[in-house]
Image (cartoon, rainbow, N blue to C red):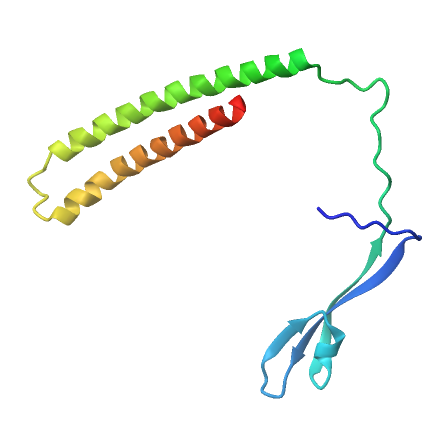
Length: 148
């Protein structure tokens, strides 16, 4: 979000949006008045926008709780433990998904004379493996970011 800092009081502006038809009958929408010259235009939306100067950086109150270094370290350790547990669980689900995929690859039904049907049958298993691989990668990235 961008902040606008003004030295003076609040400034009110009117934002107008026009829908215009040119000589060829094509419709254009614009917020620039100069784009409406020579065209058949009507106002679609008009609103007043007020720009207020930004306040100086506010300081936290004196009684506001601050996080100590030990609290931060403790929180980071808990977060790391949680991510490691999630990673172990995700790796287990990945191994299970790979096992199911390999079992399905080894099996071929009598009605699957066309290899496209085999690929169609294997697709959900391959998708599951891919999802778990991406989750493991993401959790490993998160752990490495946490170690920094």
